[in-house]
Image (cartoon, rainbow, N blue to C red):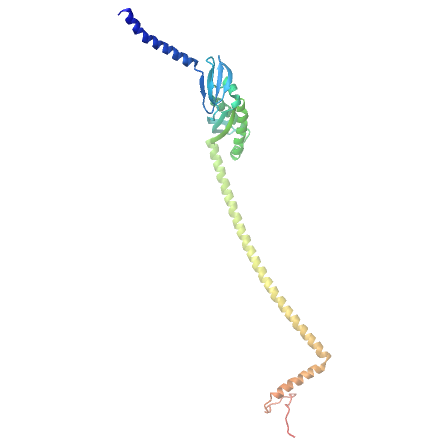
Length: 297
């Protein structure tokens, strides 16, 4: 192979090499970056944070680097967090904590805790510590009866704790809230006894109410009969008084005017005489009046 042929062969290789160099330079010096939705772009220069880019296109000089940092809602699962009540009863719970990084604290979190916005390990540790602190304030019965308040206390304490890490709590889901088996058996037995006691009390109250109802009905019926008898007695008394008053008035009138009685006797005799058929009575009693005789002149 002569020199001219070698030159012709080396020309494509040179072009390929130049192309590779140009490609490497473009990739290394590419100034365009994209920050996805729900993220922030942390701009560093030689390892130092020099700015925060929002969502969308970012144009940077080659000596700066952009790292995408998520501010979306994240979750941390805490399985079987352990605590103890004020009356020394062990208790466990599983929780899911949803949180997100506060946007204006991205640079702080990136520098101190996480380069991508994931704080699960910090959230898990903080949640377990707070669960122990909160449960220690309650007795076991109160922890069961006031579960909503316990959850609220944990939520408030965790919000304050995660603020130190630049995160904010979205919500907490508590599940598998349980005590030891022996304590749960004791609780179930106590609940059963309480239910039986309440059932017996309710039955006794029902019987007492039925007896009181029967007594009330009997008393009402007796009162009704008494009222009816009193009404009849009062009516009879009123009638008797009225009759006595009438007789008294009549007697008083007769005593004052005896001619009224004689006049009435005459009227009665007149009526009898008008109805007489002319036949004499077969027997005349002493003192009996003799009918008038119509004797012709």
